[in-house]
Each structure stands twice: as structure tokens, then as C-alpha cells.
Length: 357
Length: 165
Image 1: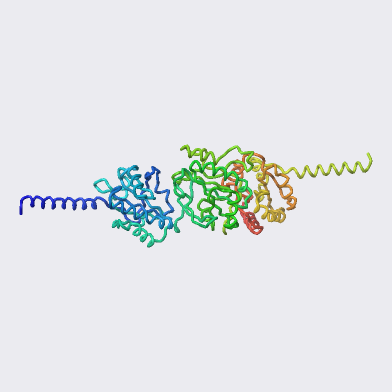
Image 2: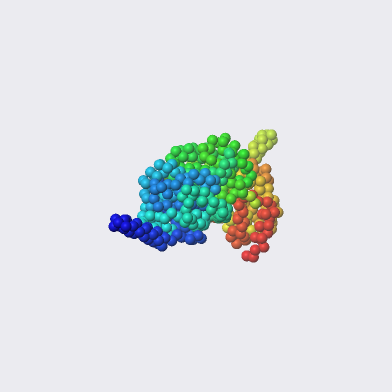
């Protein structure tokens, strides 16, 4: 054996040892949080700079896929695979996030290049990766996917990620576990996040998420009625306020929880009044119970993070001529300006929501 | 004065008086409500908040009329407070007449609805019909949101009557 051959062999052995050591220490230092533990809360920006707070997704199953780096071959395959399964995730009401330590700009490039349609979170500095026990010594995240249930607990930890078919892999695991959605119980509270939920649209029966694509700056939920004269006095105002503020990036959703008002009637009422927002039918008043909504029209406003910031009336007079306080408009103006709403809670006369007994 | 002219004056006067009576549903604000309640200490008091625009309110109204007629001499009073706009007083009067309502009736004074709602009950958010049953000491005994039947009102009133002072 020539001397140079020996040298090459030594180098190869050393490289192997080094790689092994890296692998070993990587696994030694990184210790993913186990199943059953509460998922640590965080707020991180995605590729568009929009901030996502994990606890705002309470009530939904969340898939959190940590990966080492944007635009590297393995990660690209993994993210493509998740992207391809998005329709199924959506159908199951599951929110998917990719997460790595590169910044927003890098995420933007990665998404643009690969056409990724779900949020990639920029965990610059790896703080969240560390909290989840997946930060490798090199300062990047290990490839580990967490499935977080609707109660905000870690339901599964996937350490043997199959990058080529990760979407199918996660879907398979989701199908094995009871959909946490049915079991959740939450109550809307001022200052607390209101989790996402879905209800069928009155007009076409399709399921609609209250937050939709989450691109809005605030979400207005309006409990309305077809037969309540007070609610009907506000039809015109709801329409104009919704038109005006949708243009400013606010999302509006109407909900009908009245047991006596059937879905076709709700759809017809929305059509006749030209409501520019979806009206959802809350059979069994489950969502009205979650919000503890009592009358129509009753308004709930969530900020960009899904935190409930206002609860009450549209304004202080059934008769438009006598309004002295435009509470809904004031709330939205404040939120859009990044301020606190002038009043978090107001009261007004309205029709009782007729519930199932 | 000729007899027929005197007669017509009497008729006109009576019409005017009747109209006056009909048009005068006493107006109530938060303080007024507290006074009305205080006056009735020692009795079980049923307070019902309603409006002519409220279908379930109209539907349950006969039960309140019956409750008053049945229990008025048994230590129970029933107060009905309309939260209609005072401009709609004529509608209120017409409805009360149709119902042959003989209990004390009031209409909310023009002004801030929110302070009125809070004066009636801090835990109430303004949905009607809303009925509060007070015990003999004037403390809220039961809160009934939404439409109720005579049997439900009666059962609650009986429990309130049975409660020791």
C-alpha cells in the first residue's frame, strides 16, 4: 500500500468517526419532548411575516414539522410531501406548520421556489426547537414532527421521518388517533385566544373555518337571526360595516344558532339582505354555548392572533338616528391601529337565542 | 247649557281622559326600578322585561297575566317592564289592552340602555324575554332567560314563597 493510499484511508476513517460523533452527540443532546406533555406555546413569523401563536390554534390538531434547513434536498422532499397532502389535512381540520431556524426571507424564497401553501415558521436562534428538545448542537433543528392535539398536548412524536412520503406518514398517524376535535371543550373569554372551529355554510353546506386563511387583521363573529326584529334592524348596518371593513382586511362571519330558524331560511335571509359574509348554521347551538352568546345581534371580535378583544353590541341604538356610540366600528378602528378597543364589553337589548332543550 | 251639548262635552272629556290614561304608561329608569322593587318588600316579586317587537315575549305574556291574576292576593306581585322605544308607546298600550293586563306596567325611559340593563341586573346582558323572581327580602331568587310557561313561572313562584325569610 502506498503512503498516499494510507493517508486517504486514515482521512476516510477520521471522517467516519467525526460523522458518527456528530450523529451520536446530535441524538444525545437532542431529546424530543415526549407524547402527553403540553406543547410549549410560542409566537413565530411565517414566510409572509405573519405571526402565529400556537395557543391560538387550540381546538385544532396541529402538525409541527421541524426540519434542518430550507432548500436542502431532504427538507425539500419533506415539505413537498406535506404540501401535497394539504387538501386532506384541511378536510380533517388539521393545521400544518414547517419550522426551522432560518429567517423569514429564507422561508419566503423556499415557499416561492417550491410553491408551498402552508406556513413555514422562522425559529431564528432555535429557541422553539430547544423548547421542543430537537435543537442539535450545530444550532439547527433535527428532523422531528410533533402532532399536537386540540387541547394543546403532544399526541405523537415522529422521529423516523420518511421525507419522500411524510404527508402520508402524518395522515396515517392522524387516522389512528381519535380526532381530538370532538372532545375539546373551550369557552370564549375576553383576552384569551378563541380556537378555530368549523361550521357548515347555510347556502351550500360546505364547512367553513371561522378564521379562514388567517390572513385577516381581525375577525368579527356575529350571532344573527332571521326572525328577530332587532337583528333585522341591523341587517343594513351589518352589510355596510362588513363591506367597509372587509376592504381594510377584517373578516366577518355570521352565525345562526336559533333552533327555530332552519338552514334554507337562513340562506335565503342572507341572500335577500345581500350579506357580503358567510352565514354559518350552528345546529344544536354548540358554538353559541362556547361563546356563551345570548342574544341577536351579538358581536365577538378577535384580533389577528385570534384573541377575543370585544364582546357586545354593534352600536347603542336600534334606531340609526339615535346612535351615540359606534362600538363595533370603534373596536375595529382601534384594532386596525394597533390599539386596545375603547371598551371590551357592552350590552344592548336583543332577542334571546333560541336553543335546543 | 242644553242637555245635548253637555252630553257631548262629557263624551269628549271622557275620550280625552281615556286617551290620556292609555297614553300614560309610567316611565322607568334604573333608580325608578329600585324604588318600585323596594316598595314591594315582603312580597315575592316577578319582574318581566319584554318588548312588542319580541315574539317570545308576546307568546309568554298570557302566562304572566294569569300568574298575576292567580297570585295577586297570595303575596305575589308581577311587574312588566317594556323596553320598547318610548316612541312606540301606543303599540305597548294596544298590546296590554289586548292582553287585559291589570298588573303594574312600565316602559323604559328614553336613555342609555346599558345603564338600565345593569341597574336591573349586572349579570343580565340584555336578551329578552327576561324574568327575575325576587324573594320576600327583595333578593333575586331566580333568573329566567327566554320564553317560559305558566307552569314554570308558577313553580318558581311557589318555591320563592316557600323560602323562609
